[in-house]
Structures are given as structure tokens and as C-alpha cells.
Image 1 (cartoon, rainbow over the protein chains, first blue to last red):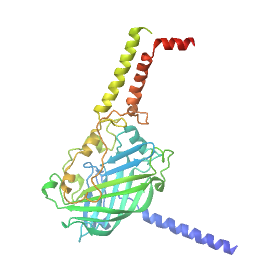
Image 2: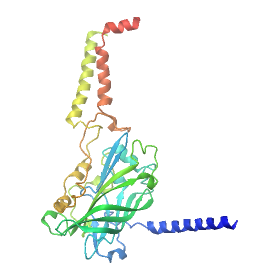
Image 3: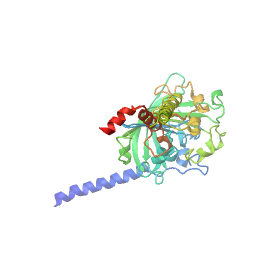
Image 4: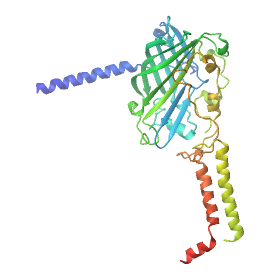
Length: 255
Length: 116
């Protein structure tokens, strides 16, 4: 009996430890600012370096491609909010970061499909309104070219989709910086930083279960991200020319 | 069916089917119907940020950011949704083409068919 109990106790102990580590992994997501255009940055993160804020409502930030046997669905959003902390020695040596993509902001070019995406049997926006990526570190950082303004590296962080958090690594991410006052950056205040990357997400990993997965929707989505950020908060930036009342609440532009 | 009724059926059916195909061609021969979205069009317009990073090498390793088209397109096939995207060449031009074919079917053959 003792021989049976020991492995059982060990298994239960391991399970408990796994549960604890997953709880620690997830952590609470950063709160949104009153305007909803940025996140409230934890003090511990602010001390790590220079804060760069994502700039929603401008260029597209996230693109996904579902290449399934029956249908190919593509979508995009420009409503990502968040921040990253750039290292004092090298802006690409990111110390922390967190970005929130509102599920309701994703546009596929088909309003009915946009609504379906948010429903409980897909990404369940009522329960989990945002897709969240919390950056933990950048590994294998290497300068790209000779300008000293662009680097490549591996982003390591926690991706939360449908309320499920997984530790992921995104290889070959490009990080670039542009100094404030650059003529090309006219219309945007502050120093700028951009992160560009591609990676894949398996829906099953995030407990997204739907009979259409595998036929109309691919098992794995290809994601592209370009996050433009500034040292000046989006609330203090000039209004983007493209901002419209419909976009502010993340609702579809036609119903 | 009288000759006038038959002619109307053929001309009407062919007119609708051909215009459906013409509209598909005029809007880019898209596979599926989509409607204009000002939000998507504005999202795709080159903005200050994209211009600011042009030349930094941001897109050198993985290329430029992909995008979906926000312009109206009358597609060949209906989207599998119960919405306005279900209108297409197949759903509008298809029935019209069938009506035209019915009109073109020889009257004698149909009569013989009924008698047989």
C-alpha cells in the first residue's frame, strides 16, 4: 500500500507545484488607463528603463492568417494598447512589456465573422476581452546592419488567449528605434521604438474548441505583429488622422 | 410559353448573369464578396509611423506587414455566413443563368418530353 501511496503523493505534489508555477506565470494583467488608450505601468517596471507606449488607432499592428482547407480567413487590428521598457544601455534590450489586443477590434472584412470571433465558442470576448502578451525578456539580441538602430532577437513572454496563458518564444523579432524630432516622424511626439515579428499560434493550446477548426478555420494561425511605440503616451499624442468614432469603442464600423 | 415571354426570360436572365460577372470583374475578381470598410481602408493607409521607420531595416528580415482589403468586391462565391456577404455571382448570376437556359430550351423538346 505504501508503494502505491508514495508515487500518488509525489504526483499530487508535482501537480500542486505545477499549479503554483502556472499561477505565478500568469500574474494579473496591467490595468487600463481611464482613457483606455494605454496601460497603467507597474512601478517596478517603470524603474527598469525608458517607457515606450503603444500607439493604437494608427497603423495596423496585428495581422492573422487562417489557411484552412475550406476557407482562408485573414484579419487585422490597430487597437493594441500597452508598453515596453527599453534598456538603459540598449533600447532593444527590453526589460519588460505588456500589450493587450481587444478581441472585438479584430476585422476580417466580414462583419458577421467579426462577431462570431468574439463569441463564447471562439475567443469568448465577454469572459476574456483581450489577447495579452507579457514580455519577460529578449534573448539572442544582435545588431542588424551598421546604423546601430535595428536589432534582432528572441522575445520570451506569456501569451494569454481565451483566458489560457502559455510561455512562448518568438524568434527573429526585429526591434528598431527612431529618435524624436526625426523629420520622417512628423506628427508623432517622442522617441519611437518598433517591434516586428511573426509567429504561430495553435488554437488547441489555448483551449479554443470549435467544430469548424480544421475545416473552415486552421488549427494554427499565422500571426504578424508590428508594434509602434513612443515615449509619449497615446493620450498626449496628436489625434491620428484615421481615428473615427466607431473605432474608439472597438465596435464594427457597420452593423 | 409565348415567344415574347420566352425572349424576356432569356434576355432578363442573361442580363442579370452577365452584369453579375461584370461587377465581379470591375471590383477585382474577388473570390468572396466583401463590403467597403472605411476603418480597414484607413488602417491600411501608410501612416506617419510606417514612414518614420522606413529605412531602419524594420521589415528587412520578415517583409512588410500584410493587410486585408477594405474595398467593396462582388465575389464569385458567397461567404458561408447569413449576412449580406452571402450575395455573389453564384447566388445572383447563377439563378439568372438557369432562367436564361430554361428560356433557350427548345419548346418542341419540352413538349416531347411531357408527352413521353
